[in-house]
Image 1: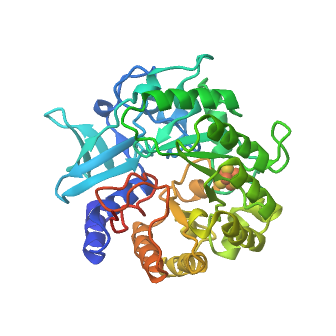
Image 2: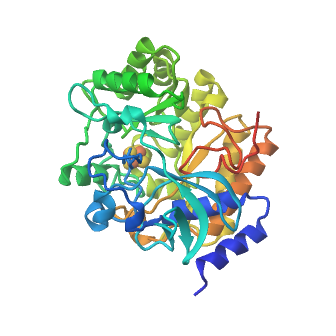
Image 3: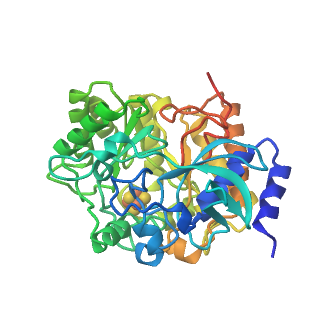
Amino acid sequence: MIRRTDEVEDLMHRFPHVPREAVIKEDLLRGGIAFDESALTDSANEASGEVKPKSYFIFSFDHRTLPELGEAALRRPPEEIVLTGGPYELRRTVVSVRVNPSSPYRVAAGEDGMLGLYLDGRRIADVGLPPMPEYYRHTLSSGKSVMEVAPTIQWGYLIYLTVFRVCQYFGAKEECQYCDINHNWRQHKAAGRPYTGVKDVEEVLEALAIIDKYDTTGASTAYTLTGGAVTSRVGGKDEADFYGQYAQAIEERFPGRWIGKVVAQALPKADVQRFKDYGIQIYHPNYEVWDKRLFELYCPGKERYVGRDEWHRRILDSAEVFGPRNVIPNFVAGVEMAEPFGFTTVDEAIASTTEGLEYFMSRGITPRFTTWCPEPTTPLGKANPEGAPLEYHIRLLEAYRATMEANGLSSPPGYGPAGPGRAVFSVSSFMDSLPAED
Ligand code: SF4
């Protein structure tokens, strides 16, 4: 069996223009990280430690369920890690934490007590942990934590407001086949953790006021309103009014303080206009996977309620409301290669994904992607515990940048700085792989 180190170094050698940082980051995101006991905090109480804990902000993003993770879940791992140095001379690289006790990557304290990232037993980077932000140490008047109501990710850049913790695409015939939002809800409830299904607008405002007050470095720059699809109503509101009400309240209370974004279904233009009127600046109608057959198989709820062609038409329509730069649909990089239905060669998968990128980028719309984490309770995760080949992820970075440059586009707004050593976007390395801009 070829060692992971050999595979990683072979790809670094074959794709020298993809930053080395991105190669390591993609591998960590697709396959997860094991945490040595020495690297976990003793903080059962999430507000008392020195390290910012993993908040489980929407999906589990782990390779095991909470009961299977045991100690690694009870003594919470960090939200993110930052890598530097080592034999590959890594520039500062922020990586979202996805726990996998079987990963060949392990975070552990060395003999000197300093944390390092080890691959196949060799230390390949120094590891920094996110400090506990001051705003996490304060609670709401209800006793809820800021971390539960308004966690921050991307090294504090983005406030992640999953205001609806479940999805109304429900069951095997509707849920996206790589998504564990509904399972994650169940497992946190079963573990007795606080996990609010529908967040109260006033509580969100209270949490934001605490962040605004104690974010003394001014790191928080944007918020994302997100959660499951609303196919009927929540609290008597349809999807546009449900998510929009939070934006409206936030913008009334903190006008222009953060860049407001929403992740929602691709809605008809009049609904999209309502998002804009409520104060949202960036719209994410995620198209998930480009290939028609795979979309129908993997996103049965989206296919049933909207349909792929209509979904794409609505993405284009929404560019007339928000402007093409501010429509940023996501796709889940890697599911194109999931067995049993996915492409069997990297060439085919890259060709298909690039066709989708070209479709949107030629119209001025810049999609972005998150790296697929094969969560074990999802159909695709169960069938593909190893995720997609690392080579796919590296070649996607290359194809993404080339398509963007061919269409005269640059990194999308609302993601912080681009470039290796500068990016903070933590759930894929597309921002690490783009040229730095001043
Ligand atoms: S729309 Fe799909 S990806 Fe989004 S929350 Fe629902 S099931 Fe998950």
